Length: 171
Image (cartoon, rainbow, N blue to C red; front, side):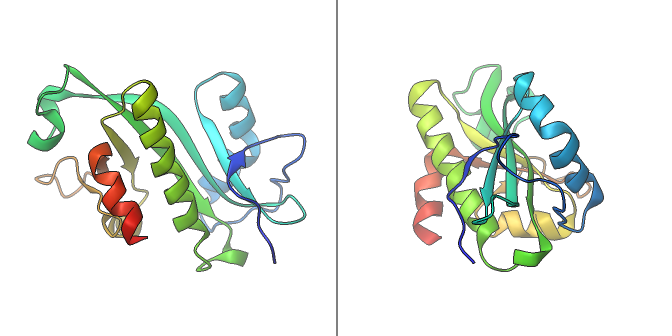
């Protein structure tokens, strides 16, 4: 099976029906809301598709900011009151291609996007909202750290843009 590189979702070309990552909310979001969010400029969806243009992996990106006063010291140091960041809101891989490394390829794409964005507009960090503890641990394996290490229920993590190069070198 061959796959295309990450590309912006094209609702006229990419096939979203049948996508099944095992988490119904992520499956439904791709099918029902990804196109609407792009049209409304609230989230950009990037996809990896197979040679039949079926989406097998996707990620959503949007800009966000983090209140410096509630940020960990490394994120807050020298930052403005609202720390600029890139939010990776969703990441999902279809079960049929699980464990083939497509999620990691998408993470590489997102991190490279953050570096490029930082050169053009400033992006201090990439932030993820892990869906569950397994996803949280997976993000930690890429070097992401907890936004609030004192709150065990908080599944938000971040990676400073300045640390992305080292992360990409390990992948």
